[in-house]
Image 1: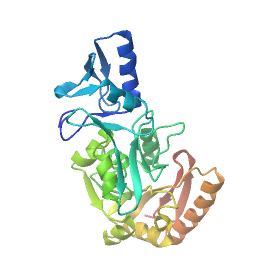
Image 2: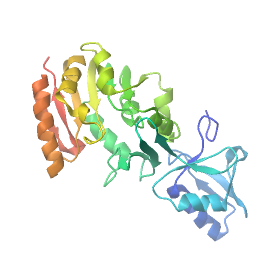
Image 3: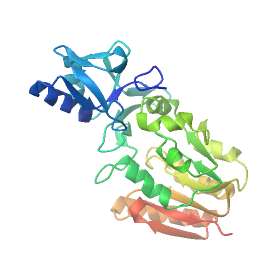
Image 4: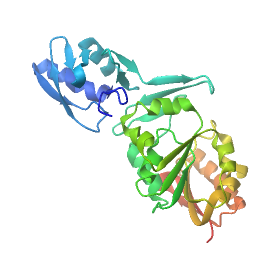
Length: 290
């Protein structure tokens, strides 16, 4: 699966193509650019007509300018050399999903809401903050909301198996275009489930996970994933001595603080003996007694 192949298309954002326009302005014949949103760098040729990409694809300058003009969405280079926004509409949930560039890996916008923290940070650092709260990750790990797969990918570096659940296949469709999500589809340690986590967790075996990372959409989009009924299911599938990280939001804000108080109370009612605030990760860690 090579860069620019049918499996992994070239993906660009304004961050990558604006330097191309600057290089054209200097009269340069070649320059270096990332064709996978910052993962690697490749040399490309600049011509009067556009940019010559590896594999024979060509981008006209008008297409480069189109990408450069949009800061809110990433673009995939099509086989014919055209560009298309990486955005999809979910008929099932009546929501729009799009891949949005950041200073690091891209985030996904769902109904206009970013699924990662991007103010003062980036999705990778945001993911690492969450995962570190329950480190070390060994044995089996449950990731209740796949999204772009960053949590599952990071957990799979050390865990024996990561089971990750995604509600909407449209999200995975967007993730397949994301260079930073490739391990979600190639890692043998990751097992994907497509379905509603509220229902899917009920079918998982008792005490079958050493760690759980629960990073649900905001409360207004998935209130049932913040319920006591769901927390009791998470408690059931977590092994004794295991830990659960629950992303909530800014614990210091009025809204986040209020939500956190209810979450902590319901987690304790579900059976977790101890719940610690982790403001650096915008969530809490719940412990199941050994």
